[in-house]
Image 1 (tube, rainbow, N blue to C red):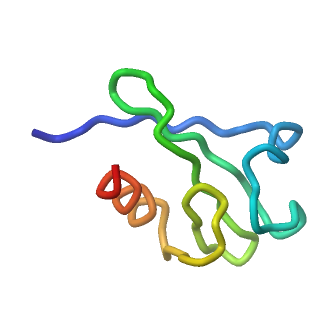
Image 2: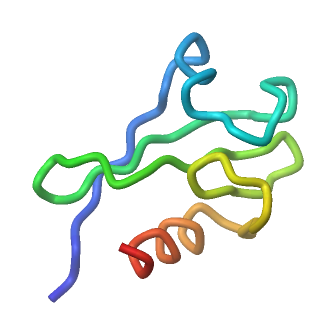
Length: 76
């Protein structure tokens, strides 16, 4: 069974609560990821350099939104 998710952009004014290891100047956008039931399952930050980070943690980066989202769903 394929899982359906929804992705919503978080306004820059709300980034402070999401970003953990980044300066906001290093981030292009922050996205909130929702399950099919509408529950927030996490967030993904896109850096200005084009890398993606799950839940604002700089330890692991992903080359695409799809790979970051896939990793997030796997770790649920």
